[in-house]
Image (cartoon, rainbow, N blue to C red; front, side, top):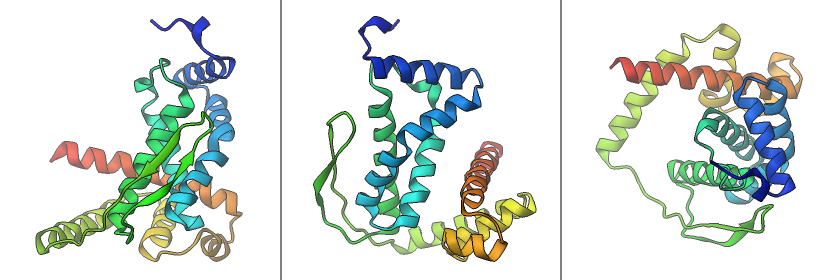
Length: 201
């Protein structure tokens, strides 16, 4: 049991919001995202160097954190836990994209003054990995077909056609914020469907 009296004021505030979120309070989720979105985004931008990828990774980081709130231990600051999830997710992304980087020595300092650095080596896929990747793409397209039309269109435009957020907003005649919010929900549905597909295999 964590002694809440040992937490900082920020720690107590964050813990209260986490507890509310776990009890289904949507405003608590929104408040946590509002507090840390900008700092997570700028950390992602330093790591991947492109605004669209940084936006995607920011949304993914919050999605993963919110799905794992039950794993959060107040022994650590919520921001430290969130930044760790975000940085690990970005490292995975960099490896998958095979960004040609041998190291990033310019570590990022988060809100708690902690230095976050990464060391990534570029790797090429061997023939077996290429085959597995192709199979995953086919599976992914089959799963995407099962999404509701508006979510399917968003996923296809963003990840198969590789359009930017602005291009999607223009093409679908939607506000930029709506595109980002609906893509967040589309990814959540997609993740659930992928998990259910794996569980049934």
